[in-house]
Length: 318
Image (cartoon, rainbow, N blue to C red):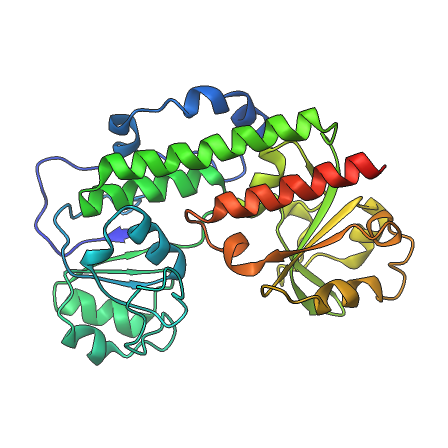
């Protein structure tokens, strides 16, 4: 949702986002044509669901979202980012030293930096109120639920920063990575491999997962794998019941972990009743860098490559 305190411009960029839970098979079949999308087409795609105009002249941007920070720098707009939140640890030159956060934001600090646009993933009431009072444009971008929403947000940032062609190029890179991964999955006879993707352990009631209503879960389907977790199966706490996991018997388990951390793989292997799951029996549990998998930016290419390599390896070994 983009909110702007600026006066309306003659031309608005309206939302053109596909349905969150659309069948992903149709997206796969159109991947080749989508990869040829022109820069003009990309710039016309917007996640602006508020009906207000996108600022196209932002020069002093505060990013309170790591994914947004990575995208801005990938577009060549890093020089316009005057401050970023403390979790924006990539790229190294991201200005994340102001002690800012999307949660419990230091509103006075934000205002003192005199931004003309604040980008955040969390609509903190005090921050939003202060920005509106001071007539500072802001955008609250909730985590995308599909890759189509990722592409749309990248295009938005291209418009905001005047880097429209760069945004189109980044989206083409991402689309091409998906298409290449799908080709590799098909060539490796890994189509339909059952995958369970654990984002984080919850409690005894279940686990936080990359289900098919998330951009990461969407990617699994787009490259030709079978994601055992559906959005409809999640409980009120957004957890997946372990019984569903055990019954589905995934051949591959992916788990978010910090780089070079092997403890999560070991922990899954030792869970009660999980010993008979195919992925556990065959030691097909793969740790995925939690930064590249949880951020909807340029490094999603690394996540796609990691998933593809793991799925093909499972197929070759079976």
